[in-house]
Amino acid sequence: MSQSKNRKQQFLTSNPVCCFCGGVSPSEEPDHVPSRAFFTNRQWPEGYEFPACVTCNRASRHDEQVVAMLSRLYPESSNSADSAAIEKLMVAVSRNYPEVMEEMLPTLRQKRNAAKKYKLELQPGQTHADLPLLSVRGPLVNSAIHSFSRKLFCALYYKHAGQVLKSSGGIAVLWFSNLQIDEDKIPRELGNVLSGFPKLERSRTNLDDQFFYRWAIADTKEVAVFLAFFRRSFAILGYVHQQADRFELPLGATIIRPFQAE
Ligand SMILES: [Zn+2]
Image 1 (cartoon, rainbow, N blue to C red):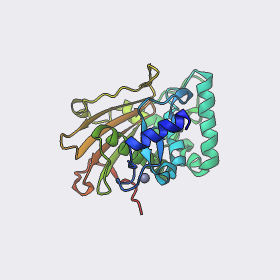
Image 2: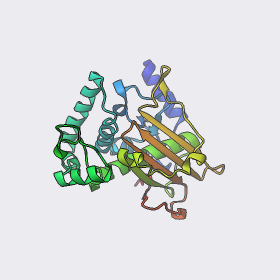
Image 3: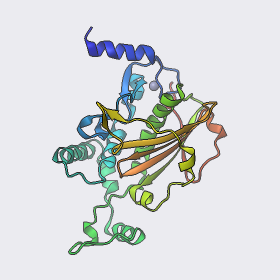
């Protein structure tokens, strides 16, 4: 058996259950969450491999590609390999999921409104049409973020609670664009609650400028909260509960359930 095959087998032996579908399917493959496409040179953080069944591992590929692309837009990279990777992602999304690209291109009116609302200043010689804005409030982008959030929070819950989010569980998700983060829309009081800081690195290179989160978990492990940042592009807040029907919902949140295995 080759070394990597051996390592994979060891991983699946010590993580025998898929962490994305309620704890009822055996694990068959390691899944990287967030996927490697989120990271410069595909250098993902050590320890962010999760046990998945084949169905869950394949389930959200196109959605993950959309979210990875969004995550890499801000800050604009000056590194040419990075820019090439982002362009490649955009081409892939346009090919795999053309409707979502179309949905994200704002009209001139939307650009004008956004400029006014967020007090964006035009540079000399720039018109509103030139503003590098993407509209991220359409239903397809939202559904991509939600689908990615299911993976993300099932994974983080598994990592920090040491157990799978059960089929009865749920995740209440709220997300914030870079403009909303700048506007201070993330609830301040979370700062006092989220005392967990993970170590996100590979070969001692720190990766938290690309992906970073803070977390807290109840002693009973029934409830957990995570706030994850993706570069300076957006943030996702996830409240995880082992009993989805016991949620007290934060305003505007969407409830997402683990994949329900058939
Ligand atoms: Zn599964």
